[in-house]
Length: 556
Image (cartoon, rainbow, N blue to C red):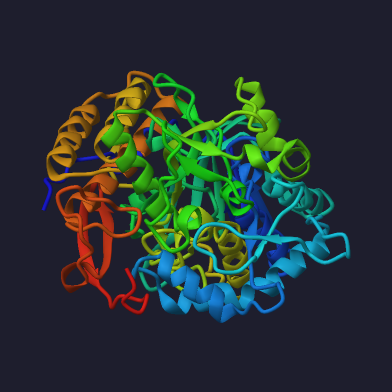
């Protein structure tokens, strides 16, 4: 068991300078958060949506490929389930997967009814494509490669047409307020926010509420290179952990195999080259033009993402090259301009023309398959706290998310929360005295933290590297902030999640899905079929293993 470092039990913050109330607060404004708000509308008295930046600044906006559902001829939820389970490498919750694939088609149709303009074929049918790990064309897309942006547009339009849903933008969720109910059970009594210039609400304030729905996205900024926007600093996961909720499967971080390589000094959000490009016929090659996925997997360039990312990394290590190449030149200019206009424009802005040139690609952090542990209705183990979307671990992704299941998960499980939350809204709790130890690390630790996580807890992991990461994270935990500001809050959240992730990665002594241990290269169902759960008590974390049967029928 790795030695547990001491982290802040809550974030140091000024006392709230303002207070407001809402029955339900939704943290996040992507597909998961806005779907929850729209579905809860009319069922609870007051809904408040808070978002860290503007409404469209989260990860949904950047989703290129599309949303997966069994909508095409000959496709079935059972086939979608089988592909999801294989990609998840034995770590999926089969019941959660069945919920996803069976409720997914109706959820997508409702998204269309809401006003989302998906692409259609010349004869008016929904245009469907294929991505890695899928054996059917089941990816609905919009604007060619602007699916997330179109879904976000439709949802924001619906929110703006619903004046009874209040929205506070530029609001960082700091910590949950906790209090006892009539039985003495601790649960959610509200949360504190830091708001930048929203009328009378400026600075730190408190929102009293009966329930909080976390839909705050992932942890991409833990790493130096990621496809995630700047807002994804693990805030929702960290505040849930500090409040007593359980985080599960944090070690399963998916690294997208085809992220445009911009050079060794590039940091932060990197341009994603959607898997759908390979779905339309592009393929990966090395410097000599050899197709590197041939013979590696039956689906070749459309193998599950962990397989492709590992193959690219292996070839990079063998050749000493910092990237491989994606060859999509044969698709032609007209096809590129019609099917992938966003990717084409982005690549050209960096001096690469995919119509005539190879695209340099390397794996980068893309998606957190783990998160705040929930049941099939989005409930966490902290009364009054629900979670949906990437911040949550519903069990559908297992050790490696199947392409384009992420938007679907946010859609389906937000609908499920809305089915049960109105009837089980708890009574108002009074916030109790917060005895958790406050603390804050300096914002300037962020660069070293990200470099350490990328080099030691990234695509390829080993016991020595993970031990080195632990030493660095322990050192960074001692860099106390001299000022209380957003940079320090975010750095503390990143450190909190990084420490939990590194601990789980050190304990899982096998290779499974997106968790790749160089020193334990084989999957080991005899010892490691199950989940690592992380909990925190006033800054001290514990990691425990919850055994579970493998759920992919024994397929590797």
